[in-house]
Image (cartoon, rainbow, N blue to C red; front, top):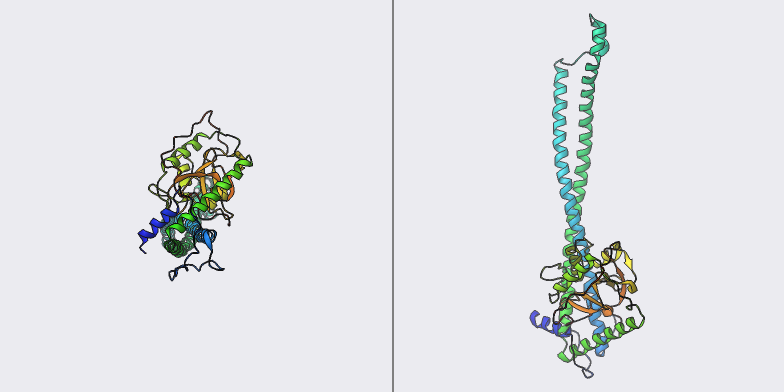
Length: 386
């Protein structure tokens, strides 16, 4: 089946409104995976809708984990590239200073060889016709001698500095090379796993896809109802000015496609959307969902305010932006688009706040959501076991 047909099937699986479907027959035998695709999950072939959903969830989870590794390597490579550039600049300056020091040292050597050195202070005192006059001039001679010593010291220091920078530069270049190779391998892994998802979707009938989507929506609805009943969403908090700007930016991206590794302007992955939203609001935050969870201050789910980031799954492999009223904006998964979803659309890990010390606004109204803002898949790469 062509990639376009597979993507069409994927989009159908992620439709927002799915009519209730009758029970479906067991799925057909799995389609053979491409040579570079990961091995399927261990265990017997899935039976019924719940088994299909679980298998899809496993494939999505593997793809997300690979994608997070890729994005982390990408960020590290950017840092190492910048460091290597800085070291090259410093090394060039150090070598220029070393050349200057060598010229100065060479001039001193020529002067000594040609007998142009000054007598020592003591010898001038012994030979002077006027010792008092010689004593008055001794400080001049001492300064000249100190200058020569300084030239030698600078040359020695410049040599050590240049050698140290050269070693650091070689290390940085080796790290760049290794990270580039790692990034390529991780990209191949992600692409292989996404092909595995397409292959599975292409093997399903429209009825099976509709039933899987219906079960996904049922799971999300039950999780959201349980969260509401717990009272975690009962309080209403106002966003900071930056938080409201982040929400505004995210709303403007609704309808744009999910593309793994993308951070705008035409497509996004989950953390690409959240990092760009806060960047547009004037605050730089980490790029990946795992870094956002690890590095940003955490807040209780019951204390959420618009602009906070909600992180999902035990490995922090998915993230969304809270907008209030128990809703988030997220880029769910391949085949889906940026959309508004229930807060409990995926298993909650926790929440973080990019601007914990900021003052809340005195009033706030959520910007109007575009038509179709809630259309499409709510779940991300993973979901609770069914």
